[in-house]
Length: 149
Image (cartoon, rainbow, N blue to C red; front, side):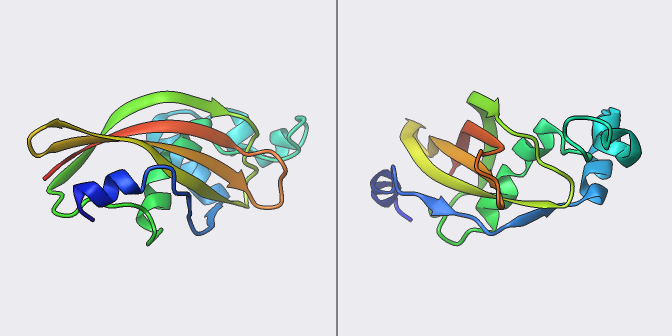
């Protein structure tokens, strides 16, 4: 979409497909990050916690944001992007654990879009990550991306 269309997309909500957060995904994330806390990787010990099962790392949930956007055909995308980079986050809150085997999806909207310099734009996306069948969301994040055209 054009710059004007990106600006016009501010505030419009899109919803991603569901993503299963399997124990295998959690284990691979633990291996990649070195975070092998038992609540993530030991189903027998995790049964004895208030969670009753293993749960995804909060940062695993956060790391699913690009996948949620990529698999959502309604995600606003600027035409001609040569490169996109994570710039950081304004706010991330982990509100509920994501149990192993559950499915999550993102409800997202662009909240800001601006030109930083010629051929470089920055936008902020607010995403609420829902857990299928749960009342409380897993996470709410304001994430900043820079794109170069």
